[in-house]
Length: 179
Image (tube, rainbow, N blue to C red; front, side):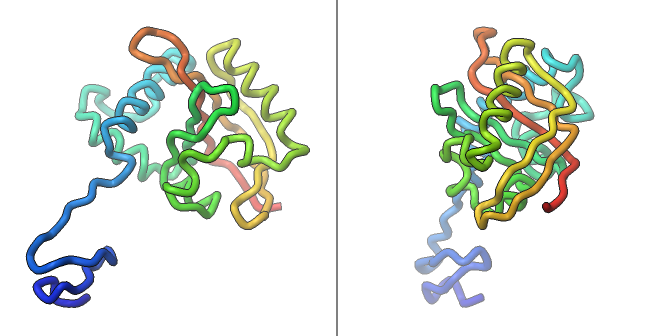
Protein backbone atom coordinates (compact mmCIF):
# COMPACT_ATOMS: atom_id res chain seq x y z
CA UNK A 1 0.00 0.00 0.00
CA UNK A 2 1.37 3.39 -0.95
CA UNK A 3 1.34 6.50 1.22
CA UNK A 4 -2.05 8.16 0.62
CA UNK A 5 -0.49 11.61 1.13
CA UNK A 6 1.48 11.01 -2.05
CA UNK A 7 -1.60 10.24 -4.12
CA UNK A 8 -1.03 6.51 -3.64
CA UNK A 9 -3.31 3.55 -3.64
CA UNK A 10 -5.40 2.37 -0.72
CA UNK A 11 -5.70 -1.21 0.43
CA UNK A 12 -8.98 -1.33 -1.50
CA UNK A 13 -7.10 -0.38 -4.66
CA UNK A 14 -8.61 3.07 -5.11
CA UNK A 15 -6.45 6.04 -6.02
CA UNK A 16 -6.30 8.80 -3.42
CA UNK A 17 -5.25 12.41 -3.69
CA UNK A 18 -3.46 13.72 -0.62
CA UNK A 19 -5.54 13.27 2.50
CA UNK A 20 -8.80 13.48 0.55
CA UNK A 21 -10.06 10.04 1.50
CA UNK A 22 -13.22 9.15 -0.30
CA UNK A 23 -15.60 6.82 1.32
CA UNK A 24 -17.55 4.74 -1.14
CA UNK A 25 -20.42 2.83 0.38
CA UNK A 26 -20.86 -0.79 -0.61
CA UNK A 27 -23.56 -1.15 -3.26
CA UNK A 28 -25.54 -3.57 -1.08
CA UNK A 29 -25.85 -0.85 1.59
CA UNK A 30 -27.26 1.83 -0.73
CA UNK A 31 -30.74 3.23 0.03
CA UNK A 32 -32.45 1.57 -2.98
CA UNK A 33 -31.00 -1.84 -2.09
CA UNK A 34 -32.02 -1.44 1.55
CA UNK A 35 -35.60 -0.79 0.39
CA UNK A 36 -35.46 -3.95 -1.75
CA UNK A 37 -34.21 -5.93 1.23
CA UNK A 38 -37.22 -4.85 3.26
CA UNK A 39 -39.48 -6.13 0.44
CA UNK A 40 -37.44 -9.34 0.34
CA UNK A 41 -37.79 -9.84 4.10
CA UNK A 42 -41.51 -8.97 4.07
CA UNK A 43 -42.16 -11.49 1.29
CA UNK A 44 -40.20 -14.27 2.99
CA UNK A 45 -42.08 -13.75 6.25
CA UNK A 46 -45.42 -13.80 4.39
CA UNK A 47 -44.56 -16.86 2.25
CA UNK A 48 -42.93 -19.04 4.90
CA UNK A 49 -44.18 -17.67 8.22
CA UNK A 50 -40.70 -16.96 9.53
CA UNK A 51 -38.06 -14.27 9.15
CA UNK A 52 -35.32 -14.63 6.56
CA UNK A 53 -32.69 -13.97 9.24
CA UNK A 54 -32.57 -15.35 12.76
CA UNK A 55 -32.43 -12.86 15.57
CA UNK A 56 -34.27 -9.71 16.49
CA UNK A 57 -36.16 -8.45 13.41
CA UNK A 58 -36.12 -4.94 14.91
CA UNK A 59 -32.34 -4.58 14.73
CA UNK A 60 -31.17 -1.89 12.29
CA UNK A 61 -31.79 -2.51 8.59
CA UNK A 62 -28.13 -1.80 7.72
CA UNK A 63 -27.03 -4.54 10.13
CA UNK A 64 -29.53 -7.00 8.62
CA UNK A 65 -28.29 -6.02 5.14
CA UNK A 66 -24.70 -6.78 6.15
CA UNK A 67 -25.76 -10.12 7.64
CA UNK A 68 -27.67 -11.10 4.46
CA UNK A 69 -24.76 -10.11 2.25
CA UNK A 70 -22.33 -12.19 4.36
CA UNK A 71 -24.68 -15.18 4.80
CA UNK A 72 -23.44 -18.56 3.54
CA UNK A 73 -26.83 -19.22 1.90
CA UNK A 74 -26.98 -18.08 -1.74
CA UNK A 75 -29.53 -15.27 -2.09
CA UNK A 76 -30.68 -13.58 -5.31
CA UNK A 77 -33.62 -11.34 -6.20
CA UNK A 78 -35.01 -9.93 -9.42
CA UNK A 79 -37.51 -7.18 -10.18
CA UNK A 80 -41.05 -7.70 -11.46
CA UNK A 81 -40.43 -6.68 -15.08
CA UNK A 82 -41.41 -8.70 -18.15
CA UNK A 83 -37.76 -9.76 -18.54
CA UNK A 84 -36.77 -9.55 -14.86
CA UNK A 85 -33.36 -8.15 -13.99
CA UNK A 86 -31.40 -9.11 -10.92
CA UNK A 87 -31.64 -6.45 -8.22
CA UNK A 88 -29.77 -8.22 -5.43
CA UNK A 89 -27.09 -10.86 -4.97
CA UNK A 90 -25.25 -11.64 -1.76
CA UNK A 91 -21.57 -12.56 -1.55
CA UNK A 92 -22.33 -16.31 -1.81
CA UNK A 93 -24.26 -15.71 -5.06
CA UNK A 94 -21.55 -13.46 -6.49
CA UNK A 95 -18.96 -16.14 -5.75
CA UNK A 96 -21.03 -18.99 -7.16
CA UNK A 97 -21.77 -17.16 -10.42
CA UNK A 98 -18.21 -15.76 -10.45
CA UNK A 99 -19.35 -12.21 -11.12
CA UNK A 100 -18.94 -8.86 -9.41
CA UNK A 101 -21.93 -6.93 -8.07
CA UNK A 102 -21.75 -4.65 -11.11
CA UNK A 103 -21.79 -7.63 -13.50
CA UNK A 104 -24.56 -9.66 -11.85
CA UNK A 105 -26.96 -7.00 -10.57
CA UNK A 106 -28.80 -5.56 -13.56
CA UNK A 107 -28.36 -8.71 -15.65
CA UNK A 108 -31.56 -10.42 -16.90
CA UNK A 109 -32.12 -13.20 -14.38
CA UNK A 110 -32.96 -15.72 -17.14
CA UNK A 111 -29.24 -15.66 -18.05
CA UNK A 112 -28.40 -17.47 -14.81
CA UNK A 113 -29.71 -20.62 -16.53
CA UNK A 114 -28.86 -22.22 -19.86
CA UNK A 115 -31.52 -21.82 -22.59
CA UNK A 116 -32.75 -25.42 -22.27
CA UNK A 117 -33.22 -24.97 -18.50
CA UNK A 118 -35.22 -21.74 -18.75
CA UNK A 119 -38.71 -23.24 -19.29
CA UNK A 120 -38.48 -25.24 -16.02
CA UNK A 121 -37.09 -22.18 -14.24
CA UNK A 122 -39.93 -20.04 -15.58
CA UNK A 123 -42.51 -22.62 -14.47
CA UNK A 124 -41.11 -22.63 -10.91
CA UNK A 125 -41.14 -18.81 -10.82
CA UNK A 126 -44.77 -18.80 -12.01
CA UNK A 127 -45.73 -21.35 -9.36
CA UNK A 128 -44.03 -19.26 -6.66
CA UNK A 129 -45.72 -16.10 -7.93
CA UNK A 130 -49.17 -17.74 -7.81
CA UNK A 131 -48.71 -19.31 -4.37
CA UNK A 132 -46.53 -16.63 -2.76
CA UNK A 133 -43.62 -19.03 -2.31
CA UNK A 134 -42.34 -22.55 -2.85
CA UNK A 135 -39.82 -24.80 -1.12
CA UNK A 136 -37.69 -27.62 -2.44
CA UNK A 137 -36.95 -26.27 -5.92
CA UNK A 138 -34.10 -27.96 -7.80
CA UNK A 139 -32.54 -26.86 -11.06
CA UNK A 140 -29.39 -26.49 -13.11
CA UNK A 141 -27.67 -23.13 -13.50
CA UNK A 142 -24.56 -21.85 -15.24
CA UNK A 143 -21.85 -19.52 -13.96
CA UNK A 144 -20.15 -16.71 -15.88
CA UNK A 145 -17.53 -19.08 -17.28
CA UNK A 146 -20.00 -21.69 -18.54
CA UNK A 147 -19.61 -24.11 -15.67
CA UNK A 148 -22.87 -25.85 -14.78
CA UNK A 149 -24.10 -26.58 -11.28
CA UNK A 150 -27.10 -28.27 -9.71
CA UNK A 151 -28.97 -26.54 -6.90
CA UNK A 152 -31.52 -28.17 -4.63
CA UNK A 153 -33.76 -27.35 -1.72
CA UNK A 154 -34.27 -23.76 -2.88
CA UNK A 155 -36.98 -21.46 -1.60
CA UNK A 156 -38.53 -19.03 -4.09
CA UNK A 157 -40.86 -16.25 -2.98
CA UNK A 158 -42.32 -12.91 -4.02
CA UNK A 159 -40.92 -9.61 -2.81
CA UNK A 160 -43.69 -7.60 -1.16
CA UNK A 161 -43.68 -3.79 -1.36
CA UNK A 162 -44.93 -1.43 1.32
CA UNK A 163 -48.28 -1.34 -0.54
CA UNK A 164 -48.64 -5.12 -0.11
CA UNK A 165 -48.18 -5.85 -3.82
CA UNK A 166 -45.61 -8.25 -5.28
CA UNK A 167 -42.65 -6.36 -6.77
CA UNK A 168 -40.22 -9.11 -7.75
CA UNK A 169 -39.02 -12.51 -6.62
CA UNK A 170 -36.17 -13.97 -4.61
CA UNK A 171 -34.50 -17.35 -4.29
CA UNK A 172 -32.31 -18.77 -1.55
CA UNK A 173 -30.47 -22.08 -1.34
CA UNK A 174 -27.56 -23.71 0.45
CA UNK A 175 -27.23 -26.97 -1.46
CA UNK A 176 -25.44 -27.01 -4.79
CA UNK A 177 -22.69 -28.95 -6.57
CA UNK A 178 -20.73 -28.71 -9.81
CA UNK A 179 -21.79 -30.94 -12.69
